[in-house]
Length: 360
Image 1 (tube, rainbow, N blue to C red):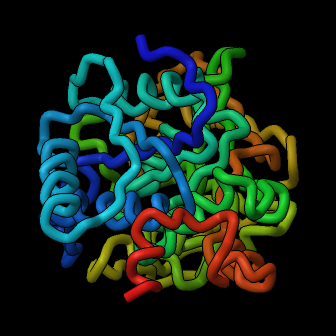
Image 2: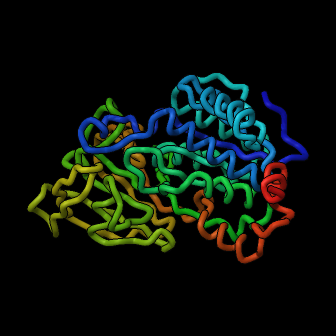
Image 3: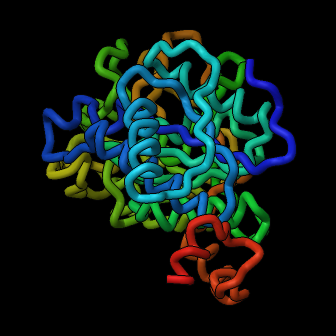
């Protein structure tokens, strides 16, 4: 196991090689990110972080090529372009190319004392990190298929923001916002969480984990509901928008289109717009426990089928305001600029490469 880091600034990166490659790309017009592009994103993150003086970046030693491509880019960048990079440390862990890799890596990063965790993936990847990261703030970057939680953000700037928070130029309390989560309990045991939506379907199998058929969905719980969202949470967003920073969520009961209180045309996946009927809509208040009345089905978390429940299982869902912290990248850069952090010379800017360029 990797020992605890002392005397330097370390940032963790979770780059999911499988994000954006689920079945929704086959049944919709979804785009995707190649392994090469994900490696390029991580490269830009590293260059942005090194400018602010981040010493070390730790990553999963994935077998899909992101880590290998990154190390090659680092070698070429230093030799050919004179780039300055942080040290890249690949975690000493087995790689199974499953969700357990992310959970195991986050546990190790927490033990190492990383200051920030940058996540490249969709809603599902971010949910896994949120399960184990505790109070360590995340930067959420979108490289998945349906992305309601993470944002599209230029990696260079995101890396700079990560460095500013990790080095203390902008404090965690200034830089972050706390997110709501949905928690699900089955037979008295808390099983998991959802960052955006928790859905109940009448399927009795998991199969292809991605969920895209609204006719199979009976109930939707959401932490927030944005009218410009993609995925199942878009149904809630078009029915009754709920801001991310509000202290409540939403609970919808669905029905066939044309029935119930209203019918919506919702973007369930990129390019896939389907009619959805809403029978009932209720505000979900913090820690208000909702008991599931369905006898059989599957719980989906942030668009992915997670576990089956059967008659006799007692399932409860509630909204928790004390979810993971995420870094607001534009806010961090704005605060740093107001403080003159980027004005040369600066105690927060690594001068290894800049000194020569200023001289030139």
